[in-house]
Image (tube, rainbow, N blue to C red; front, side, top):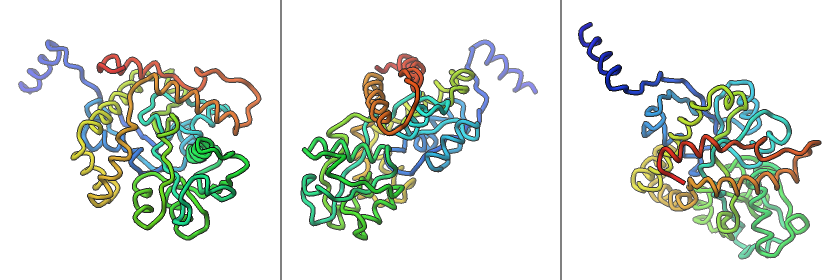
Length: 317
């Protein structure tokens, strides 16, 4: 009892901020290097530092949007065409942060195809129509002189492992893959023809929240963002520690984990200006595939004010 009394006095005198351990659920569409911000934040204690007891779950993009809307999850991490497409179609969600403002994706082709131009008339495996992988394939094709709508075909195969299997089995001539599957495909003789981050800014992962959450708990959102920023700074500054994390989290050997780290680290960026620019591009592209009867402003789809506040407090851009 006496010890408790002294702890209470210390808190009152020193004004030590004390957070209750808020329980939150964060959904992810896949386990891959570009999605490691919050799993690493959980492993290294950054979420705990911000007062959270977090559960990170993997569910599909469509299920994640529904779960976010009805409150079954508090946050999702996929931005791309899925979250923004949902917002454009009237689902009350918004992007509140970017953590990977360029897609960590490569256009990988079967051994007989040596250039992007050689894929003219061929089929590329993507996740879904209008998603990040689909847009990345189109952007790469356009960059290398192909008409992405008329000179390539796209097959919505699903998650990365399904796209990798389709490529390996010869069901498609090319696939859009991220690490470590791009690395594994190269080891098996396939060709990496181009990388999306070399030709475009297009936010792939970040933080998405419901409009109700933004209205009711902006301080909570900012704390989650802070945990993500801490994780990204750790990723950029600590190669050995991050490689070890990737080995444990993705069950990779050291070679594959190192290749994954080297592929993704360069696109982890906390500059709000890059995020803003990339989101506007995503919105413009998604509008081409999402049928909406009304015009929506940037503020209807994204709210970066809490990201700006968190970065200002932490000495970022």
